Length: 320
Image 1 (tube, rainbow, N blue to C red):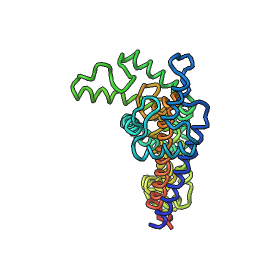
Image 2 (cartoon, rainbow, N blue to C red):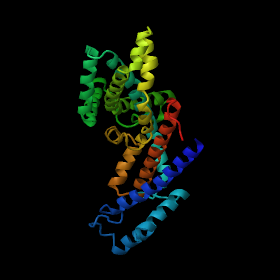
Image 3 (cartoon, helix red, strand yellow):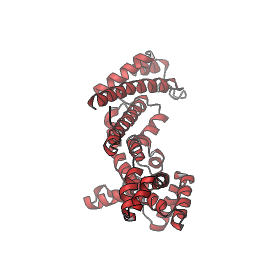
Image 4 (tube, rainbow, N blue to C red):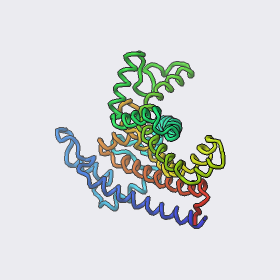
Protein backbone atom coordinates (compact mmCIF):
# COMPACT_ATOMS: atom_id res chain seq x y z
CA UNK A 1 0.00 0.00 0.00
CA UNK A 2 2.73 2.46 0.95
CA UNK A 3 4.63 1.76 -2.27
CA UNK A 4 1.45 2.48 -4.25
CA UNK A 5 0.88 5.75 -2.40
CA UNK A 6 4.48 6.85 -2.89
CA UNK A 7 4.47 5.96 -6.58
CA UNK A 8 1.13 7.70 -7.08
CA UNK A 9 2.38 10.80 -5.28
CA UNK A 10 5.54 11.00 -7.40
CA UNK A 11 3.51 10.63 -10.58
CA UNK A 12 1.27 13.50 -9.54
CA UNK A 13 4.23 15.70 -8.71
CA UNK A 14 5.69 15.11 -12.18
CA UNK A 15 2.28 15.79 -13.71
CA UNK A 16 2.07 19.05 -11.72
CA UNK A 17 5.40 20.22 -13.15
CA UNK A 18 4.25 19.34 -16.67
CA UNK A 19 0.95 21.19 -16.19
CA UNK A 20 2.74 24.28 -14.89
CA UNK A 21 5.08 24.33 -17.90
CA UNK A 22 2.23 23.89 -20.40
CA UNK A 23 0.17 26.58 -18.67
CA UNK A 24 3.16 28.92 -18.74
CA UNK A 25 3.61 28.34 -22.47
CA UNK A 26 -0.10 28.82 -23.25
CA UNK A 27 -0.33 32.05 -21.25
CA UNK A 28 2.70 33.55 -22.98
CA UNK A 29 1.46 32.47 -26.40
CA UNK A 30 -1.68 34.56 -25.93
CA UNK A 31 -1.55 37.96 -27.68
CA UNK A 32 -0.43 40.90 -25.60
CA UNK A 33 1.86 41.32 -22.61
CA UNK A 34 2.21 43.77 -19.69
CA UNK A 35 4.69 45.97 -21.58
CA UNK A 36 2.05 46.82 -24.17
CA UNK A 37 0.65 49.93 -22.53
CA UNK A 38 -1.66 52.53 -23.94
CA UNK A 39 0.09 53.96 -27.02
CA UNK A 40 -1.60 57.31 -26.44
CA UNK A 41 0.47 57.83 -23.28
CA UNK A 42 3.07 60.45 -24.32
CA UNK A 43 5.33 59.67 -21.34
CA UNK A 44 5.94 56.07 -22.36
CA UNK A 45 8.96 55.82 -24.62
CA UNK A 46 10.47 52.77 -26.32
CA UNK A 47 13.33 52.70 -23.83
CA UNK A 48 10.82 52.66 -20.97
CA UNK A 49 9.09 49.66 -22.52
CA UNK A 50 12.47 47.94 -22.88
CA UNK A 51 13.20 48.51 -19.20
CA UNK A 52 9.83 47.04 -18.25
CA UNK A 53 10.49 43.96 -20.34
CA UNK A 54 13.94 43.52 -18.81
CA UNK A 55 12.63 43.98 -15.25
CA UNK A 56 10.08 41.20 -15.68
CA UNK A 57 12.34 38.97 -17.84
CA UNK A 58 9.96 39.31 -20.79
CA UNK A 59 12.91 39.66 -23.16
CA UNK A 60 14.23 36.22 -22.18
CA UNK A 61 13.40 32.93 -23.98
CA UNK A 62 10.27 31.15 -22.85
CA UNK A 63 12.02 28.37 -20.93
CA UNK A 64 14.11 30.90 -19.00
CA UNK A 65 10.98 32.88 -18.14
CA UNK A 66 9.51 29.67 -16.73
CA UNK A 67 12.61 29.05 -14.60
CA UNK A 68 12.54 32.64 -13.33
CA UNK A 69 8.87 32.27 -12.40
CA UNK A 70 9.47 28.96 -10.66
CA UNK A 71 12.46 30.36 -8.75
CA UNK A 72 10.56 33.43 -7.59
CA UNK A 73 7.56 31.31 -6.63
CA UNK A 74 9.65 28.98 -4.46
CA UNK A 75 11.60 31.80 -2.82
CA UNK A 76 8.49 33.93 -2.28
CA UNK A 77 9.86 36.83 -4.32
CA UNK A 78 7.28 36.60 -7.09
CA UNK A 79 5.63 39.99 -7.65
CA UNK A 80 2.59 41.10 -9.57
CA UNK A 81 3.03 42.92 -12.88
CA UNK A 82 0.04 45.09 -12.04
CA UNK A 83 1.04 46.65 -8.71
CA UNK A 84 4.44 45.06 -7.88
CA UNK A 85 2.96 43.47 -4.75
CA UNK A 86 4.10 39.98 -3.64
CA UNK A 87 1.86 37.42 -5.29
CA UNK A 88 1.58 34.81 -2.53
CA UNK A 89 0.43 37.23 0.22
CA UNK A 90 -2.09 38.73 -2.21
CA UNK A 91 -3.47 35.27 -3.05
CA UNK A 92 -3.54 34.33 0.64
CA UNK A 93 -5.66 37.38 1.52
CA UNK A 94 -8.12 36.57 -1.25
CA UNK A 95 -8.12 32.92 -0.16
CA UNK A 96 -9.26 33.93 3.31
CA UNK A 97 -12.14 35.83 1.68
CA UNK A 98 -13.11 32.94 -0.61
CA UNK A 99 -12.92 30.24 2.07
CA UNK A 100 -16.11 31.20 4.00
CA UNK A 101 -18.06 31.53 0.75
CA UNK A 102 -16.79 28.16 -0.47
CA UNK A 103 -17.49 26.36 2.82
CA UNK A 104 -21.01 27.77 3.16
CA UNK A 105 -21.92 26.99 -0.46
CA UNK A 106 -20.51 23.45 -0.19
CA UNK A 107 -22.33 22.83 3.09
CA UNK A 108 -25.61 23.99 1.56
CA UNK A 109 -25.15 21.84 -1.56
CA UNK A 110 -24.30 18.60 0.21
CA UNK A 111 -26.81 19.12 3.03
CA UNK A 112 -29.79 19.67 0.73
CA UNK A 113 -28.89 17.51 -2.27
CA UNK A 114 -28.77 14.15 -0.53
CA UNK A 115 -32.09 14.33 1.34
CA UNK A 116 -33.78 15.69 -1.79
CA UNK A 117 -32.37 13.01 -4.09
CA UNK A 118 -32.89 10.14 -1.63
CA UNK A 119 -36.54 10.95 -0.95
CA UNK A 120 -37.18 11.48 -4.67
CA UNK A 121 -35.79 7.99 -5.38
CA UNK A 122 -37.75 6.34 -2.56
CA UNK A 123 -40.97 8.06 -3.69
CA UNK A 124 -40.39 7.61 -7.38
CA UNK A 125 -43.28 8.86 -9.49
CA UNK A 126 -44.89 10.76 -6.61
CA UNK A 127 -45.80 14.43 -6.58
CA UNK A 128 -42.65 15.14 -4.55
CA UNK A 129 -40.47 13.41 -7.17
CA UNK A 130 -42.07 15.25 -10.08
CA UNK A 131 -41.90 18.61 -8.29
CA UNK A 132 -38.22 18.29 -7.39
CA UNK A 133 -37.43 17.15 -10.92
CA UNK A 134 -39.10 20.21 -12.45
CA UNK A 135 -37.38 22.55 -9.97
CA UNK A 136 -34.00 20.92 -10.55
CA UNK A 137 -34.18 21.31 -14.34
CA UNK A 138 -35.47 24.87 -13.93
CA UNK A 139 -32.52 25.87 -11.70
CA UNK A 140 -30.09 24.14 -14.08
CA UNK A 141 -31.53 26.03 -17.06
CA UNK A 142 -31.79 29.51 -15.52
CA UNK A 143 -28.43 31.36 -15.67
CA UNK A 144 -27.04 31.95 -12.21
CA UNK A 145 -26.12 35.56 -12.87
CA UNK A 146 -29.67 36.37 -14.03
CA UNK A 147 -31.22 34.77 -10.96
CA UNK A 148 -28.71 36.56 -8.73
CA UNK A 149 -29.65 39.95 -10.14
CA UNK A 150 -33.33 39.19 -9.55
CA UNK A 151 -32.62 38.19 -5.94
CA UNK A 152 -30.53 41.33 -5.36
CA UNK A 153 -33.31 43.56 -6.70
CA UNK A 154 -35.94 41.78 -4.63
CA UNK A 155 -33.93 41.89 -1.37
CA UNK A 156 -32.97 45.54 -1.76
CA UNK A 157 -36.48 46.61 -2.76
CA UNK A 158 -38.31 44.50 -0.14
CA UNK A 159 -35.98 44.52 2.86
CA UNK A 160 -34.09 47.73 2.03
CA UNK A 161 -30.77 46.23 3.12
CA UNK A 162 -27.41 46.08 1.25
CA UNK A 163 -26.21 42.77 -0.14
CA UNK A 164 -23.15 43.81 -2.18
CA UNK A 165 -19.63 43.39 -0.84
CA UNK A 166 -18.37 41.73 2.31
CA UNK A 167 -19.72 44.31 4.73
CA UNK A 168 -22.02 47.30 4.91
CA UNK A 169 -20.45 50.69 4.41
CA UNK A 170 -19.81 52.36 7.76
CA UNK A 171 -19.69 49.15 9.81
CA UNK A 172 -15.93 49.33 10.33
CA UNK A 173 -16.33 51.14 13.67
CA UNK A 174 -19.28 49.12 14.94
CA UNK A 175 -19.09 46.68 17.83
CA UNK A 176 -17.63 43.23 17.05
CA UNK A 177 -20.98 41.46 17.41
CA UNK A 178 -22.68 43.75 14.88
CA UNK A 179 -19.73 43.48 12.49
CA UNK A 180 -19.91 39.70 12.70
CA UNK A 181 -23.67 39.66 12.08
CA UNK A 182 -23.24 42.05 9.15
CA UNK A 183 -20.54 39.83 7.63
CA UNK A 184 -22.79 36.79 8.10
CA UNK A 185 -25.67 38.54 6.34
CA UNK A 186 -23.49 39.45 3.37
CA UNK A 187 -22.33 35.81 3.19
CA UNK A 188 -25.78 34.17 3.12
CA UNK A 189 -27.12 35.29 -0.26
CA UNK A 190 -23.92 34.76 -2.35
CA UNK A 191 -23.46 31.32 -0.78
CA UNK A 192 -27.04 30.29 -1.48
CA UNK A 193 -27.01 31.62 -5.04
CA UNK A 194 -23.75 29.83 -5.88
CA UNK A 195 -25.18 26.62 -4.37
CA UNK A 196 -28.49 26.50 -6.25
CA UNK A 197 -27.14 24.95 -9.45
CA UNK A 198 -25.04 22.49 -7.44
CA UNK A 199 -28.10 21.37 -5.47
CA UNK A 200 -30.07 20.82 -8.67
CA UNK A 201 -27.32 18.78 -10.35
CA UNK A 202 -26.19 16.76 -7.35
CA UNK A 203 -29.72 15.85 -6.27
CA UNK A 204 -30.32 14.35 -9.73
CA UNK A 205 -27.13 12.28 -9.39
CA UNK A 206 -28.19 11.07 -5.94
CA UNK A 207 -31.65 10.10 -7.19
CA UNK A 208 -30.24 8.22 -10.18
CA UNK A 209 -27.69 6.36 -8.08
CA UNK A 210 -30.24 5.43 -5.44
CA UNK A 211 -32.64 4.09 -8.08
CA UNK A 212 -29.85 1.95 -9.54
CA UNK A 213 -28.93 0.51 -6.14
CA UNK A 214 -32.55 -0.10 -5.10
CA UNK A 215 -32.98 -2.42 -8.10
CA UNK A 216 -30.10 -4.69 -7.07
CA UNK A 217 -30.61 -8.29 -5.90
CA UNK A 218 -29.23 -7.75 -2.40
CA UNK A 219 -31.87 -5.05 -1.76
CA UNK A 220 -34.64 -7.50 -2.69
CA UNK A 221 -32.98 -10.09 -0.47
CA UNK A 222 -32.89 -7.68 2.46
CA UNK A 223 -36.57 -6.94 1.99
CA UNK A 224 -37.39 -10.63 1.73
CA UNK A 225 -35.66 -11.21 5.08
CA UNK A 226 -38.21 -8.89 6.66
CA UNK A 227 -35.90 -5.98 7.46
CA UNK A 228 -37.61 -2.62 8.05
CA UNK A 229 -37.73 -0.35 5.01
CA UNK A 230 -35.67 2.33 6.78
CA UNK A 231 -32.91 -0.20 7.45
CA UNK A 232 -32.94 -1.42 3.85
CA UNK A 233 -32.74 2.11 2.42
CA UNK A 234 -30.42 3.89 4.79
CA UNK A 235 -28.15 1.06 5.92
CA UNK A 236 -27.81 -1.07 2.78
CA UNK A 237 -28.81 1.01 -0.24
CA UNK A 238 -27.47 4.41 0.80
CA UNK A 239 -24.00 3.14 1.75
CA UNK A 240 -23.44 1.68 -1.70
CA UNK A 241 -25.09 4.57 -3.50
CA UNK A 242 -22.63 7.02 -1.93
CA UNK A 243 -19.52 5.37 -3.38
CA UNK A 244 -19.45 7.34 -6.68
CA UNK A 245 -19.67 10.60 -4.74
CA UNK A 246 -16.28 9.94 -3.18
CA UNK A 247 -14.81 10.85 -6.56
CA UNK A 248 -16.88 14.04 -6.68
CA UNK A 249 -15.60 14.93 -3.22
CA UNK A 250 -12.07 15.09 -4.61
CA UNK A 251 -13.06 17.84 -7.04
CA UNK A 252 -14.29 20.16 -4.29
CA UNK A 253 -10.81 21.52 -3.60
CA UNK A 254 -10.16 23.17 -7.00
CA UNK A 255 -13.56 24.88 -6.70
CA UNK A 256 -11.81 27.26 -4.30
CA UNK A 257 -10.12 28.91 -7.28
CA UNK A 258 -12.74 29.24 -9.97
CA UNK A 259 -15.94 27.91 -8.52
CA UNK A 260 -17.53 31.29 -7.80
CA UNK A 261 -16.03 33.70 -10.33
CA UNK A 262 -19.41 34.90 -11.59
CA UNK A 263 -20.94 35.30 -8.14
CA UNK A 264 -17.88 37.01 -6.71
CA UNK A 265 -18.08 39.50 -9.57
CA UNK A 266 -21.84 40.07 -9.15
CA UNK A 267 -21.72 40.46 -5.38
CA UNK A 268 -18.37 42.36 -5.41
CA UNK A 269 -16.82 39.68 -3.22
CA UNK A 270 -13.00 40.03 -3.23
CA UNK A 271 -12.13 36.36 -3.58
CA UNK A 272 -9.77 34.18 -5.58
CA UNK A 273 -12.06 33.88 -8.59
CA UNK A 274 -12.36 37.64 -8.90
CA UNK A 275 -8.60 38.01 -8.46
CA UNK A 276 -8.00 35.62 -11.36
CA UNK A 277 -10.51 37.47 -13.54
CA UNK A 278 -8.84 40.82 -12.82
CA UNK A 279 -5.40 39.31 -13.46
CA UNK A 280 -6.50 38.05 -16.88
CA UNK A 281 -7.81 41.48 -17.84
CA UNK A 282 -4.55 43.12 -16.68
CA UNK A 283 -2.33 40.40 -18.25
CA UNK A 284 -0.80 39.85 -14.84
CA UNK A 285 1.14 36.70 -15.73
CA UNK A 286 2.58 35.92 -12.26
CA UNK A 287 -0.86 35.94 -10.63
CA UNK A 288 -2.45 33.94 -13.49
CA UNK A 289 0.26 31.30 -13.47
CA UNK A 290 0.32 30.99 -9.69
CA UNK A 291 -3.46 30.59 -9.49
CA UNK A 292 -3.33 27.99 -12.24
CA UNK A 293 -0.55 26.16 -10.40
CA UNK A 294 -2.54 26.17 -7.15
CA UNK A 295 -5.68 24.95 -8.96
CA UNK A 296 -3.74 22.10 -10.57
CA UNK A 297 -2.18 21.16 -7.22
CA UNK A 298 -5.60 21.16 -5.53
CA UNK A 299 -7.07 19.02 -8.30
CA UNK A 300 -4.31 16.43 -8.05
CA UNK A 301 -4.49 16.46 -4.25
CA UNK A 302 -8.27 15.99 -4.38
CA UNK A 303 -8.12 13.02 -6.75
CA UNK A 304 -5.32 11.50 -4.64
CA UNK A 305 -7.54 11.84 -1.57
CA UNK A 306 -10.44 10.24 -3.48
CA UNK A 307 -8.30 7.20 -4.32
CA UNK A 308 -7.48 6.74 -0.64
CA UNK A 309 -11.10 7.23 0.47
CA UNK A 310 -12.29 4.65 -2.05
CA UNK A 311 -10.13 2.03 -0.37
CA UNK A 312 -11.45 3.10 3.04
CA UNK A 313 -15.18 3.06 2.27
CA UNK A 314 -15.22 0.07 -0.10
CA UNK A 315 -13.62 -3.10 1.32
CA UNK A 316 -13.55 -4.66 -2.18
CA UNK A 317 -10.90 -2.14 -3.27
CA UNK A 318 -7.33 -2.61 -2.18
CA UNK A 319 -4.43 -0.28 -2.96
CA UNK A 320 -1.77 -2.43 -4.61
